[in-house]
Image (tube, rainbow, N blue to C red; front, side, top):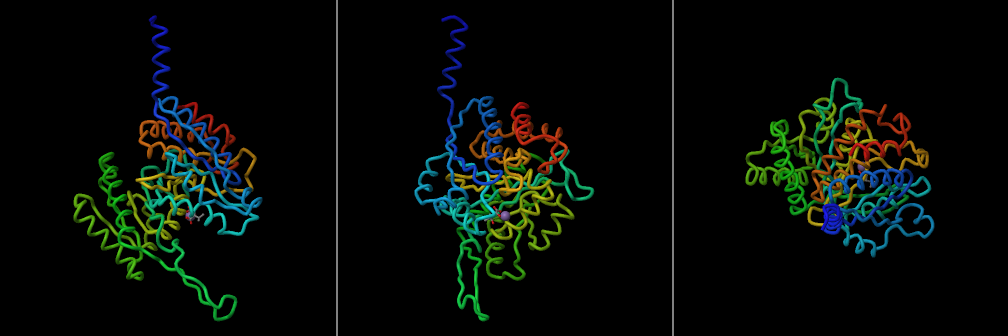
Amino acid sequence: MSCQRLSIFLRGFRYFMAKTYKIATIPGDGTGPEVVLEAKKVLAAAASKGGFKLEFTEFDFGSARYLKTGETLPDSAIGEFKKFDSMFLGAIGHPDVKPGILEAGILLKIRFALDQYINLRPVKLYPNVETPLKDKGPEHIDFVVIRENTGGIYTGHGGATRVGTTEEIATQLMVYDRRTVDRCLKYAFELKKKRNAQNKKYADKPITLIHKRNVLTHCGDLWYRAFEEMGAKQYSDLKRDYNHVDAANMWFVKNPEWFDVAVTENLFGDIITDLGAMIQGGLGVASGGNINPEGVSMFEPMGGSAPKYAGQNVINPMAAIGAAMMMLDSLGESKSAAAIETAMIATMKKMKSQAAGKMGMSTTEVGDLVANSL
Ligand code: IPM
Ligand code: MN
């Protein structure tokens, strides 16, 4: 065989043998489809460089389908999703749909049904990205929040009676069991161990449990004891810290450099991760993962559907690209994930701002720049 034919053969063989990941995408509402498109562009470039294949299957769940058919997400879709290696979500939400319907019917349903019990939220300020925190830079803001993602108030335990009367009663309970707490803590401790091994600057910092055990004496106590027990028994070499959630809010703003891995329950996590998104430069750059470490995970940009920016090619796709990076990392393609991060940093340097409409370039151009610098 000639040298040229051999090389063509080898390239074909490599392509044939390449690992293929099946990805389910839900572009969803508003600007969701625009940012998913850019994320896919970057993923395709990363795959061709990294020697693996990605096969995308699109699902049309979201407001348009709901407004037309009354259906949010059929149970059969859950079975379908289980056949994929990972999932990617754009955004869900529409001004014509009553709040709660699409959230519960699509996003929360997927989290619960696929048991995506970790919500992973990196809070990382990249160079050339503006933070509202005075005198803080990338060296101060680089941590992750692990939010428990299937328990607590989100379980929907409780109810309402005498509705509409002056004696109306409503309850919504914070529900936790030891197994749910332990599996979340386990993930957090393991991540802390990994980060400590990666970089000395992380190793100097503690893993922080965030709760409200001065008032939530049952749930807070359960989390605290579980944290202390697991820490002492299995991770005694890791420094541990505890913050009440209200205090953690203050420290996120005043001393974000104190944090490396912070772990917390569902609702507190929901609240503090939006604060986290702001200090890292806003919703244009904040990404998250709904992770089932033993199953199918789903990655998403944190910003919502932003209807007022939809269809104008002005939304920032960086958060979606960051979510794509997280997805590759979770699939084990960490080299390609790191390459995406480098390309993101290079692109952010060229952007005027990370805010929608103020980037100095279009949505498409941001995606092109990241893909090309791969
Ligand atoms: C989030 C969102 C969701 C949540 C909503 C849309 C149900 O705010 O992912 O943080 O509360 O978890
Ligand atoms: Mn939220």
